Amino acid sequence: MQRYGIYRMPAEWEKQKSTWIAWPHNKKDWPGKFIHIPLVFSKIIKIISKVQLVNILVKDKIDQKNALFFLSISGVNIKNIRLIKCKTDRAWTRDFLPIFLKDKKNKNVLSNWEFNAWSKYKNFKNDNKAYLKIKKLVKIKIIKPKFKKKKIILEGGSIDVNGNGLLLTTKQCLLSKVQQRNRGFIKNDYNNIFNKYFGIKKVIWLNKGIYGDDTHGHVDDIARFISKNKIFIASEKNKKDKNFINLNENIEILKKFKKENAEKFKVIHIPMPEPKYINGIRVPASYLNFYIANKVVLVPTFKDPKDKIILKIFRKHFKNRKIIPLDCSVLVWGFGTIHCLTQQEPY
Image 1 (cartoon, rainbow, N blue to C red):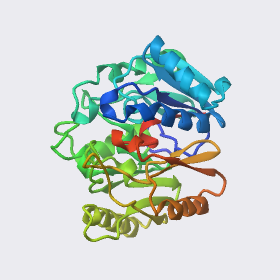
Image 2 (cartoon, rainbow, N blue to C red; image 1 turned 135 degrees about the vertical axis):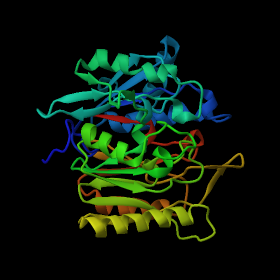
Image 3 (cartoon, rainbow, N blue to C red; image 1 turned 45 degrees about the vertical axis):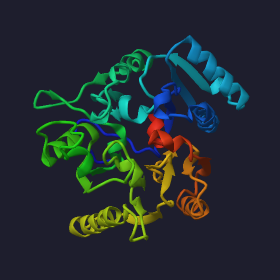
């Protein structure tokens, strides 16, 4: 495999050693509906624990007992889970836990990026320190990426890689002055950062994310690599929908990139579900927030007529993995679903 930087970020479909999850406890993330959330997390953990180890961060002894209760009534394989006491502010591990990389000897390395709650919320100190517990447990080298002697704020949900030199992200998330992560950083700065730390040769800069997404444009709701040369991209046919212009623009950007760079990847359109509202607020319901584990793919569903169509598409393109739908119609009230709450550790 060709390398372009010091490290390489493996693709999600590469063999995994474990999955990292944080037990939900912040009731403000699901106001009025938190009672349903532990059971949804238990279902996700049950599915993943059948194929690999699941590390679960619990904030204290009370949460540890709660987690064990819900996991046991859900029939989770307790042998394949590990409960770890670690304070967190929220449960979105994709964005605050370290990203596992490979060095030139193909050994795992932890890369710890700064986290500031998407430049939106004030409580993030525990999330930003969670890496210390991971470092202690996995006992591998840890790096703290910097650019021009500055620490870099970066969330796992803002990028997606094919493990072979390509990366997807959005201008809205990384270059906008709204919810600005790294003041003064320009496109080329990020290209250099991604080259050095993720082994990226080319960055595909999509424009905007979806409405209802409080991260201001995370890519894992709109476009994902599913293999070295295949991309799933969100598509909206309804011209009256708020996402119509932005999602079609992203599709055009992909076409243009493919043509200009003579790339041979295939683009598969994934229809968006009907707009979802909870308590009058539009939530970021998207089928793209799936998680690929060793033998399965967990796909968010929304009690939507398009659920069945989507599952057929997933089965067609993931022939070697079992496609498991998971109802996320309440989970999405936290403005994220399956991919947002998981972080993979490669072998």
